[in-house]
Amino acid sequence: MTIEFKAAVFRTPNEPMTIETVSIPSTPPPGDVLVRMKASGLCHSDLHVIVGEWEVPTPMILGHEGAGVVEAIGEGVTGVAVGDHVVLTWTPPCRRCRYCVSGRPVLCDEVARHSANHLSFDGRTRITTLDGEEVYSFAGAGTFGEYAMVPESGAIPVRADAPFAQASLVGCAVTTGVGAAINTANVRPDETVVVFGCGGVGLNAIQGARLVGARRIIAVDLSDDRLAQGRHFGATDVINSAKENLAERIGELTDGRGVEVAIEAIGLPVTIEAAYASLARGGRAIVAGQVPDGMTITIDPFVMSDSELKLIGSNYGSSRPAIDFPQLVDHYMNDRIDLDALVTRVIKLDEINDAYDEMKQGIGIRSVISY
Image (tube, one colour):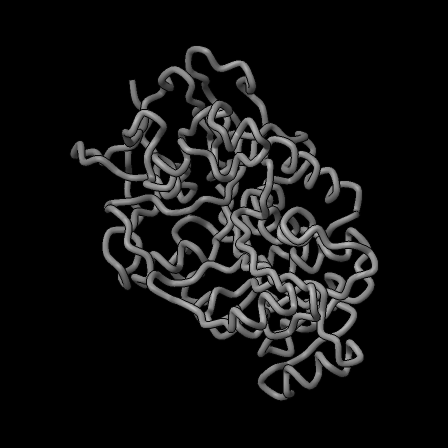
């Protein structure tokens, strides 16, 4: 038995996604969970695919930031039950490899082999067109459809009183940004933090730095409107680098030392290099932004060693989704972080192409599909 449902299907870069009817098994295979999607955020990572900066197999249902309700479970599933409210993770850990057992599940071997190639853990797809063509699910999630099927560890139960639109953002932007500050950078209360980019990830990095009480939080962007959002989410200072000399302003704000922590949340070589250049001696630059394929950066290794600088990658905020997702939802429900202001537009599935056109223009923070 199968379920037919609507999904936005990506087939060709720089062409609109098409709303199609596709099919998924009504009974999940062993270890899998069928989720009826309730909300999905539109992330810039999917835009990399849409505009051809990342190559993926097609046809594909994009989307990896979503929340929904468990509709069915496969044999052997014990961690979630039918009716549970869940947030999907695009790094569903196998719980057995060396990375998982050492507490670094975002680096899981099975994720690297399968989810990163847009497949389930058995190396297969789960969705087909009505003509029988296999359809890939982006990062093994594919949240731009009314249903998704993921490994048990890919569906994280959260409290049922949390609204789906806000909870869906925990599946990517919130965890990536807050985690970059708290988990990867391990920001301390006596430190100054600069965040490059006031989009979904950057604003959450600001929230993360505020959550742990960073002494000073500097937001950098090219847009005064986005910098105003940065202040709302916790920035103590803002720099419009289109109007001000970035290095001079950071020097003024830090008595000429530079910052202890720089978080790059855009995904451009020039801003990664600028984040690194903003560091004080002993500082650490965190790369949380996702760059187009083939991009490289240039740094001076002598300065790195002489000043003991650190350049650190942050995948998914170095998170442990099974622990961090419920905690972040609790933070939101207890007014410790703001997820409401992140949702600047709620759309229907058939409005997805227009919403991505707005993203290209820098309009809004997060559009969320409501199913």
